Length: 167
Image (cartoon, rainbow, N blue to C red; front, side, top):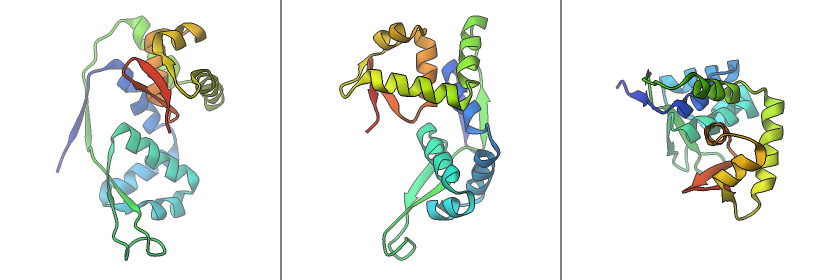
């Protein structure tokens, strides 16, 4: 079955660009395009980076998941299996140049810079989180740049207007 992911929000480009930004992610996605693959098999073949790729794909909703039976699991415990959900993208975006430049800037931040900024925001949020506008203002970011950062991160998410740590 061919399923197409429709992208019409410019900030959705960030996770798509990051989903295929290294060889491991591309290879993991190829593996799960063919058939259901258990997490242990991906982790055995690609290591911890493979498991992180699955987590990222799951966050982006690029994969569907199901639990194995106890017999198929590890040590009698069920495990997750993954399969790609989409086989095509339909990207239809029109936005100002300054908006797309902010999005590409966030998408192309190197891992060290991104991790530093992500940690600073994570620490700033505290246990209860903070309103997105307050976070953006504190770090000198536009709301669009902050939304793009959140879409790239696995450590926090929006709950209404509030930015909170993921538990």
